[in-house]
Image 1 (spheres, rainbow, N blue to C red):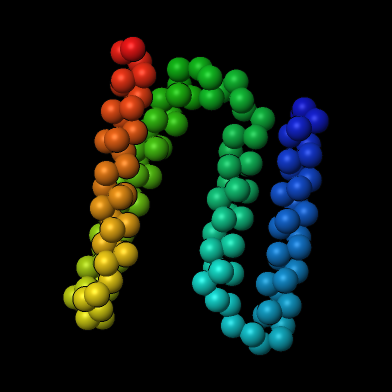
Image 2: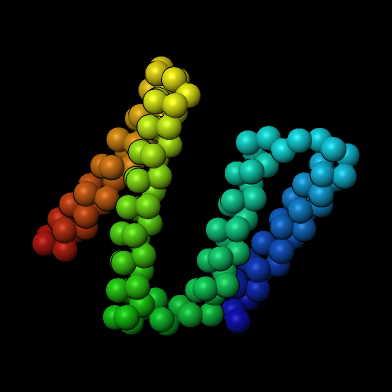
Length: 128
């Protein structure tokens, strides 16, 4: 492992231990978790998943199969994100009757437009 990777791993371990202890203290003192704590747990899970899957495999990212895996996983995650946001918005709009949730609708629109815009930029960069 390179020095940069070791430092990054130690920082991630430190952040996980610090916030893990904080969340554990919330649990022990019967304080509820807010949205910030849930987002923190999700962010840490994503970071650890990234570390465990691609940490030592920088060369795999560069070969053809690694690029294809990254491309397919990006498209799948984009589709899952869009469908999840659409499903949550429909629940919010139809079942919970929260019909003034424009920010959520704008997030769905942005999720829908992100992939084609990025693909257009990449094609323009490749073509010249």
